[in-house]
Length: 233
Image 1 (spheres, rainbow, N blue to C red):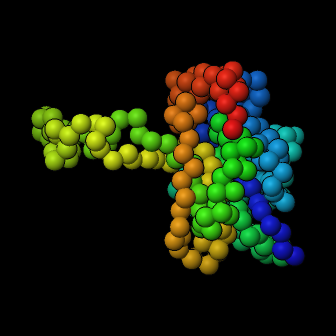
Image 2: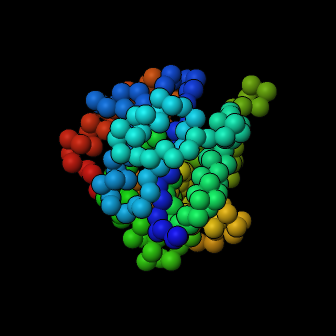
């Protein structure tokens, strides 16, 4: 049986820096709920599943409309498993069940800035550009070319060739938002390398890495601001 698209929300239990990070209350509901609801509202997926090793996360995921058809294995539940390991496990498990997907989306569980409209817009870009993947990215707020390093207590430019270059004259450099991306399953299942990656550029006001309490507070402030200005596109 061939299905079209799957959304995989990766939500391991046991966060050390922020306890129960993936299900902690964020502006009124568990933060993972935003990822699930955006996927549901987009109306693009045949399957919206949460990959987890936690029964508590699984229960909350089901409450908000996601499926948890199986739990992670011992390796993908460990500290050294990568997101790629988790995604491959999910796709292989569905394959064992005779289910194959042509497109997949990875949505992080702490990504309240991902909206249904962004999911739809980025898929449209992927299809129109015939891309292998679409990544949510944001521009570095300060050019990395002007970074410093410390050598034996001495402050030095990492890239001395840019010491006297104006910031506005430097090439813009982007990084992953840590929120969402589209890919084709064969890159995981068959080891086919990506040839065409397309960026979906997100405003810095809708991006926040959440690793500590200050990050959490900033994310809530940015989310409230986004909703206040109805920036849900």
